[in-house]
Length: 198
Image 1 (spheres, rainbow, N blue to C red):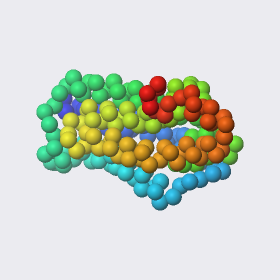
Image 2: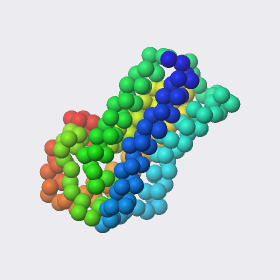
Image 3: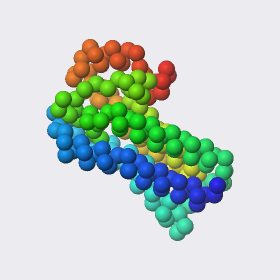
Image 4: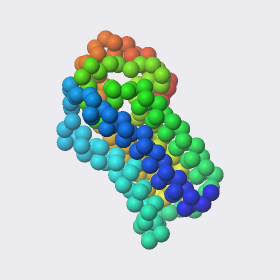
C-alpha cells in the first residue's frame, strides 16, 4: 500500500457512496411526497460542513496533493494503518447500503418525514437507532486512517461530528412527535450509533 493507492481508495469509496445514495435519492424524490420538514438554514449549514469534511476536502486533497495541496500537513505513511482504513471503509459502505435498503421509501437526506412514513426497527435498526450515522462515523474513521494528513485525515470525523451533534436531537424530537410511545419504547431498548454504548 502506498499513499497514492490510499488516495485512490478514498476516491473509489466516495464514488461507491454516491452509487448507493443517488439512486435512492432520485427514487424517493420522484415517488414520495414530504409530509413533515424541518429543513432550515441550520440544517443546510450542517450538511455543508459535513460535505466539506467528508467530500470536498478529501477529494481536493486526493486530486491536488501532487501539486502541493495541503501536503505540508502529511505525516509519515504507515501501510498497516491504511490497510485498516480499507477494511473500515468497506464496513462503512456495507452498513450504508444496508440502511438505505432497510429504510426504503422512509429514507431522506434531510430532516423530513415522508407521506406514510413508518418506523423501521428491524435489521441494522434493531442494533442502533441511527445506523446511517454509524456508517458516516466509520467513513470518517476510514478517511483518517487512509489519508495520513493532520488536516484532511480528521476532517471527516470533525465535519460529520458537528452535523451529528446539532442534528440528532432534532431528528429524534421529530420521531417522538410522529411515533409517540412506539418511538419512546424503541429509544429505551437501543443506543444511538454504537450498540450497547452510545
